[in-house]
Image 1 (cartoon, rainbow, N blue to C red):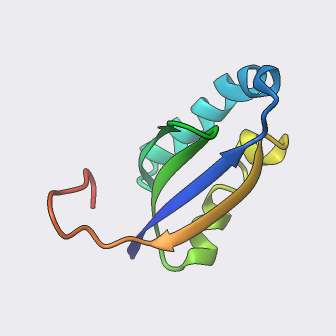
Image 2: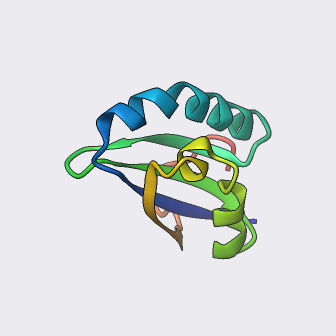
Length: 94
């Protein structure tokens, strides 16, 4: 399995983000417990987030987060996945 950086861009609707965030974080905790999600957190600047996911392909990385309430409820307005090779340091669980 490879490691992928999945980048989310969020809607500007801050109320919607706040309303869905608890369910989103619970979903990510479940992915983390399953070993699929290694790291996740919000990005500064334009509203969005970064998820580090273990998967077999870019398509599988995106499919792993298809069930995310942020995706389901339209908080995520754009997303992409790119394979990421760690050359310095270590990822937990990688």
